[in-house]
Length: 415
Picture 1 (spheres, one colour):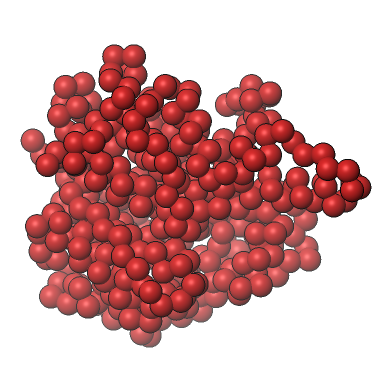
Picture 2: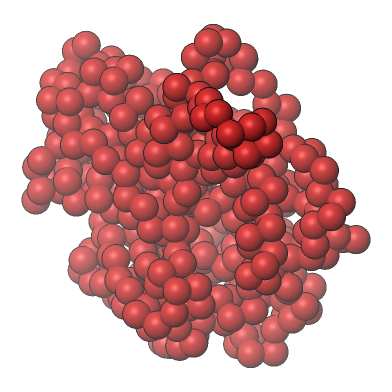
């Protein structure tokens, strides 16, 4: 089996349009929540979201190319190009048959679908659709576009498992390289769901926070008064590579991937299992693949969306699995700052986890002021401020509608 490492990072998020700024703002505890600017939210129960700030597609794409891309495509391509540059990949010097792309989205071109459908029904019965309509909405668009742009001829696809999507993309990249089926894979996820139909749909499900008066503090994982998640947008990309390839290129190595697991709650289409059975098995199997004990795990980047049921089910899974060292393993919830990027969230959080392994600094969980009484007080949830701690092993969790559970385990790289 091949050893697998991370050699490049790229991100565009509600708290930073590149990895460096994203990481700095995580450590500062910056909230990405603002009132929605994309459309008039006055008639919606939720009027705020975590939008990408100061974004102009023409800073990144020619005008005619930007018109062919949904916002989620744009975000994914921007994050991937940053990761490629960060990894100093020179594709012409590499075997492109051995380089792949596994890039996810939970929904795909939500904004394009909404606009094109509205235009059709509002502007008469004559069908007149954008010729790029279909290619702008398919969730696998980023994977295909990256492959075409760089002539990458290896594995190429898009796992679609709602909010677990991009963590599964990373696990699949890890597995492909570990088994010797690829040398390098650009993996990640992208989402742009801040639209009328998306906000309206999630409001109808009572999933979103409606704390419009205090929107900056609305994403409050583990808090007694949490009332739903705050939707976000953006993308994360990681260059996943065999150690052999990375050493041969003299590449910078951030961390090693040593375990990954995918399980199912098999319980409910939107709710997590009350005892977190899928989460428990995903974490346990990822740790088992690395052949370490739970006592060796230093840090968990929790899925922790700030929903009443979801936070507690994950806490129960962690409590059960880490019973012997519950006070030693450190936990945080970066969604308290970025909001929930749906299919892009796993990749963005994997970047944060990777950087914690690299730097031994753990970002805070912000906004949590009154801890839910069902959460053990001995749990270290990194409340309020960043923490410095040696991080040799770290887990990143993602769970999606449909009962999809995924956990990826990273290790501090040593030769």
